[in-house]
Length: 417
Image (cartoon, rainbow, N blue to C red; front, side):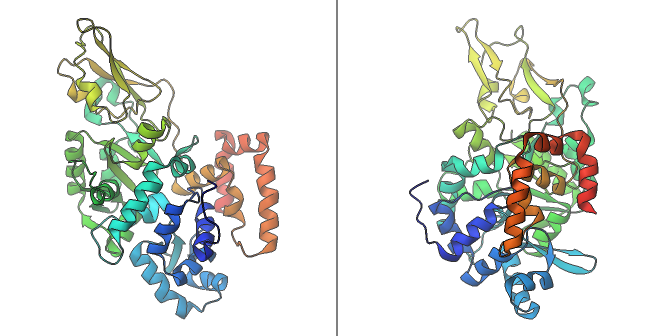
């Protein structure tokens, strides 16, 4: 990364602030260009000093030195652009700075808009999020990942369907949500500006619960009914898209409908061989060799190249790479001879209970937990406490304990208190 220029001013400070999130923002020329096109200098100055957690305007005002009255119109403008998220808590509006991916990158392309230069942004976002591995490694490397695959339930044999837990069922996730919204697929919209979009449907990005309320309120998504959401899931399943949902059990924020060519998450697998970029479903594709004719239809459908045909023409058979199979079920309908079966995995996939728990686990794993505890980056005492905490958490016994199931329940109750 030696080619990156220093002296980026407020945008350099903003990059460092964004990189303190568990979902990071590694420095790169393309990122600075993105930030300059989305944030005014005033907005960037405010963003640099915003706390890591949700905070009301008075708390942000104390950090920025502005009065709440002067700050609120700027925060409102930033929320309209998706640069901050705002939610009501105990009758008060609270704000949090949007991260990069699973944040303002997507928000910037969830609709066609003329208040930001989308075509210019698309070029830099492809360079940063698709063509270079640094962001993908920052976000997707590790055992705790933001997204997880939801198996197509129609691909699972009836005798195995009972093994699918409620939080693993896309239909159940939709039915239990309190609000639903749909917007343009960020990945395909970006690629459309670059002339590289595929022919898959565009308006399918599904948000749920509080995230749906925020995006609809800010004009970034269209409010839909539960029934329309279920229709979108059925249509994208029929189109052979992978359902990748928010990697939490309770109140998930989104489900993406992904293709192997445009999706940033699947691109990390296809381009950078990050085979654990997405949490797999509890199933794995398997081939019945007696039925398989080696036609290759399943391999063509697989979005991550996890199936290949081996052998000579008369003896050719499909084979599944277990290490890269998502367990999505996209391949099964492609087989005319019913030679593909979704087999349950022996080991249960562990899913964080909530977005907060996932954020903490990601922070511990990525060496950023201290940023959640001591998040005033202008205070020398917080800097010292962050340094001490980072050293303690990095000790193998401490890190192992914090990430273990046995410790987590008490640990998260204490943090919430």
